[in-house]
Image 1 (cartoon, rainbow, N blue to C red):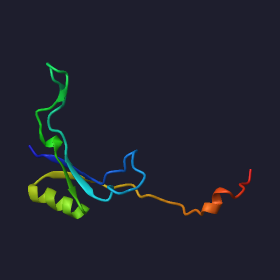
Image 2 (image 1 turned 120 degrees about the horizontal axis):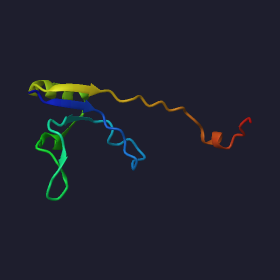
Image 3 (image 1 turned 45 degrees about the vertical axis):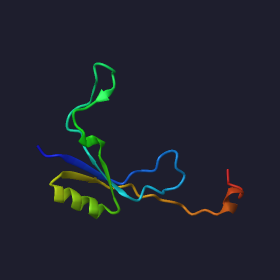
Image 4 (image 1 turned 45 degrees about the horizontal axis):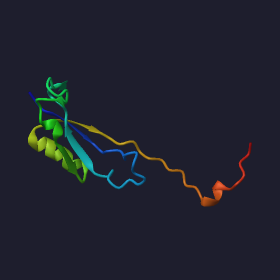
Length: 98
């Protein structure tokens, strides 16, 4: 059985105004066993401990090289490109046509 991994660049959280921690690449292992509630406490548990590991890399190439070196079956998810339209502060006060 091969272990699958997902390589992606995380999006910024709702609590972030900047894009500080969104430039690194993350390698996450996909769960092998399903999660289920534990009978005693009702917490969600899994027999798989690899889903707790999240590795961070500076570039996509480093993450792919690591996955190849370890013999992992991986998939790369490319981030969506951000399109910013430049605006001036004075545009906020310019009258708009109705």
